[in-house]
Length: 99
Image (cartoon, rainbow, N blue to C red; front, side, top):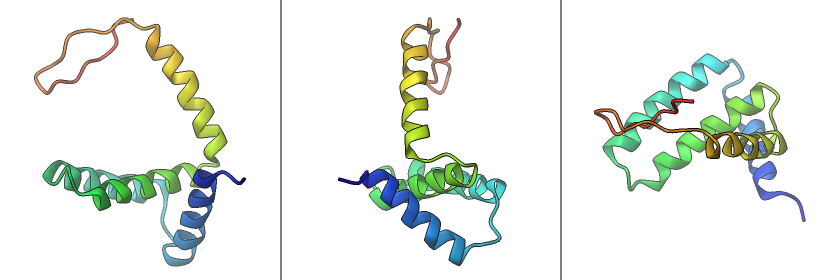
């Protein structure tokens, strides 16, 4: 069976190349920031979450990352994160690593 995530990344790429051919990594990331603000305003709106995922997957695709690359990177990064020491939350609740 084909990987459903790779299929959706490919489908997103076909659509965005045809519809927004002049878009750049910067334009996608700027748009993603706008969509994140929309999630903060309406966190239960699954379509806003979908917008973010679409933009993120397409931006990664534009830099040459397919779903295998992303999957492996997430696994590798999770192992790093599990072995880090973490500080206290800041005023916004963000916790950063200290080592």
